[in-house]
Image 1 (cartoon, one colour):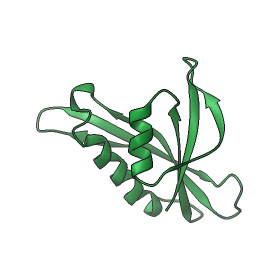
Image 2 (cartoon, one colour; image 1 turned 90 degrees about the vertical axis):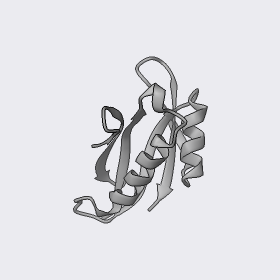
Image 3 (cartoon, helix red, strand yellow; image 1 turned 180 degrees about the horizontal axis):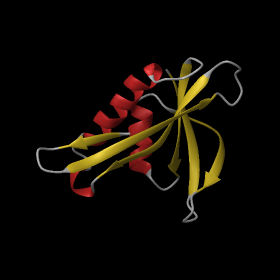
Length: 112
């Protein structure tokens, strides 16, 4: 977990988990479990910095296998986050899920 801070407050975070690749033996993925930015700091570049950091550090995280991709899920209704992820090289993949509140979850992946 990484926290973005100003001099006076915490303004955002990312959380990554590492898992075995779902289809490739002896490979791992970094799963972006959470990325959040305090509403008053959204659209100010904090999310971009947090995501860039996650992408940069993921390949060197402890893992028994090389980390070759980053995976994430994003709400179908969250167009702003989808644009952020697309600009950083993520692409939609098949499969979907549902968040506890009932929102459809789309899956995205980026090669590292």
